Length: 210
Image (cartoon, rainbow, N blue to C red):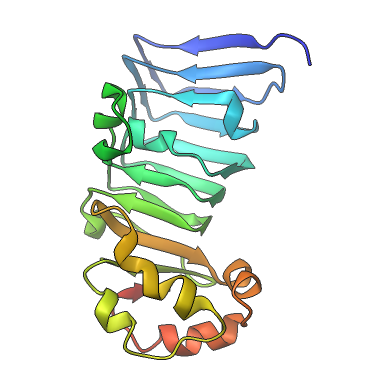
């Protein structure tokens, strides 16, 4: 593999623009002092080719063309009034200062954001007011206050190994966790059950959005 070209956006404000971060030979930085307002950000690069550090996004749309996998740097972004489209798995959003000692992990926040057009699998939301967020509907489902509601959620029998692996361990998530979203088809496959069996239990709880 050859050298990657660094494409750096920092210390500037950009409004009403479309940023296409799609070059497979580039390493993109959305970095310190960057503010994007009412921009569309198209992402079609692996998570390893995108660095987000202390950037602010206001009323932006993220169109994720290549799945955002196990990406924690969303927690170093300030996200307000943004819309997310595409697939996300194992990602974290919001304010999770304990994640790392770098000051940029103190920067993250999320409010008034819309994920209804996104597919979220094993994604967490930290240190935020979840009442300002819009989560995707079924086949995604979202545990609200998963740590606080863990005893209640453990009180019923869940299908497959979902109860043993996921529900019995909700209390082990970081204390900043305010919501946790799964994608039923992938969860069913991983935990040896079916989306229908999961939904039958999900429907019993008012602390799960689906």
